[in-house]
Image: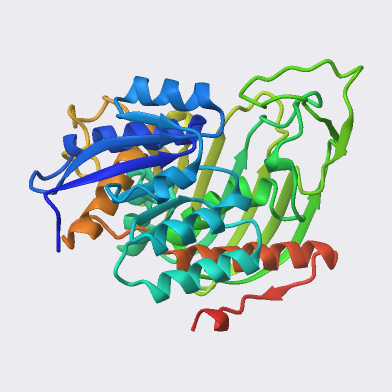
Length: 399
């Protein structure tokens, strides 16, 4: 039975967690009216100052320091999980068993075993909506490029190139945290490559093989902070103990799509001077298109429509003819611009539609979809461990 109002909680009050908190706050301002209302109930974070600040800043009723308080609260209906990957399974399964709808940040889990268990829990509980947060599929510019490909505007696609480069790990004094623990493939690939792979398949269709993978860890050890690690935490490295970094700072690989197109992928969390740099190029036999997160509100297109002598990439501003943008912005016309933040609001709206059983925006990715992507990243890691050997993608476990 669809409720008139759904109570929402967010577990995790870091950078991404507060973005989820804001998305639920904004969800009633976009697209069609008529969906159930959202009541902002609870922010949970082990670090109480973060939980309290986020609750006050985004208008939630209360802050708690234990996620179990959310699971045990019978009034909470929808929960965003935005914490370290190793915590996803335990929290998600407890919430699902408690009858709550769950939107979990990507990647789905820290290991294939945990991802498989989460997908199994999803199948066992069809009465709740479960989803993994691949927000870039909600980006109006990327969705428009996907539409150009689907409509054949660029001809037969021959090559997808994507790179996601960030610098959050470039400083060797950055303290040890959950992001730097885990097997190879759970570092830059799991954090950044998960978005990149989802964007690639959104645009070019399913991947069938990976090869030529290479990974490296640039910073072998990181200092261990004695207290709670927050954004910008600085410690005295002369006195600190150090812990080994066990996963990848850089990951690259080549892939083949079912269509026959080739993809090249590059991920880095030690890309000096690039806080959040995601770029995509799509090349076909009749045109090409590109997008840069730094210029989120535009794409560049080059095709056969230009008059002789006037060819070359032209800038096209995100506008109401693009997916998501019309009625997804309070000022929906070219030149207003777009940011990464809107993607989270569009995702929350799509999730709420699923909870209410309403058709509209494309559905959110399921836990099974998240498990499938982790199988792709595992294949990349196995290719890298075998000096770049090709690995065919096998999704038989999903059947």
